[in-house]
Amino acid sequence: MFNLDEVEALCNSLSQAFKQSIKRNAIKLPPGAERCSPGEALVFWLADWLMKARLLGPDELRLVIDDLAGDVKTFGDGLAGCNNLGGRILKLPTAKLVFLDRRHVCLDGRPLFVDLKTGAVAEAIDYKPLETIAYNLTGLYLRYSQALKSPNLEPSEDANRA
Image (cartoon, rainbow, N blue to C red):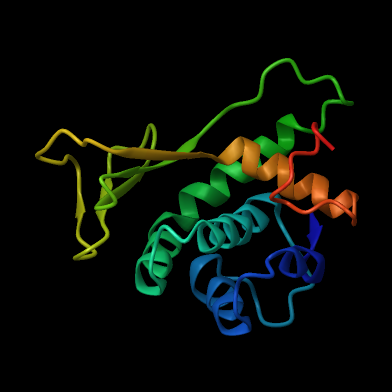
C-alpha cells in the first residue's frame, strides 16, 4: 500500500479536480482514504505520464483513464506482488497501453479497443494502423515507485541512469 498524498504529489501535471475524479470515478476510493493499492497508484501515474506526453486532449485522457482503470489497477496490483520477492526479480509481467493511429487505444492482451473520437468500444478495428505508440506499464510502475523512495528523482528520469 502507498500513502495517497505521496502518490498524488508525484502527479504534478494533473489538476486537483482531475485527481479527485480519478479517486471518485476511476478507482472508486472511499472519501477520506489515506492509502491506495499499487494498482490504484498506477492509474494515477498513468494519467500523469499521459498528460506529460501531450498525446491526448483532456476529454480523451479522461476517457482512457475511466475505461481502462480497472484493468490497469488489476495489473498494477499483480505486478506489486512480483516486486516484493526480496530484491530478486527474475522476470516481471508486462502490459502495454497501445495507441493506434491516435484514434484507438487498448491494453495488449485485452480484446477491446476504445475509440478516442467517439468513446465507442469495439472488439476489433477495421484497419491496419500505420502508427502505434506503446507505453510499458511495468516500466511506468517501477519508475514512479522508485521516485517515491528517492525524493530527488523525477518519474520522467530513469533510475538506472541516475
